[in-house]
Amino acid sequence: MTSRHELDATGLLCPLPVLRARKRLLAMAPGEVLRVRATDPAAQVDIPHFCTEAGHVFLGQERDGEAIAYLIRRG
Image 1 (cartoon, helix red, strand yellow):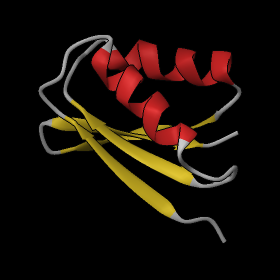
Image 2: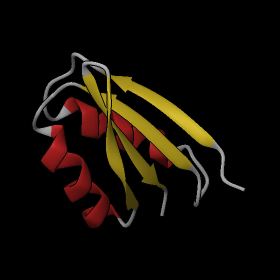
Image 3: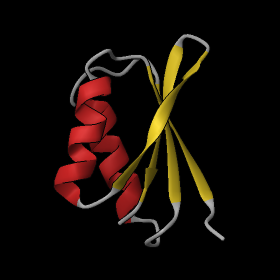
């Protein structure tokens, strides 16, 4: 079973949502899931790209009020 971690990156602009996600993922065990909430429109491109480049699995995104929540499984 994987644990789920949360990161609130609402109000932050590029590249901060990705940088904060990267830092949080480094502290997690492989297979754990991080849920990142962000309002920056660039995160829709940046987060999936970051996952591909860093070896993490982008599990998808969903609307969460004013933000979008991105799910990332640590590689």
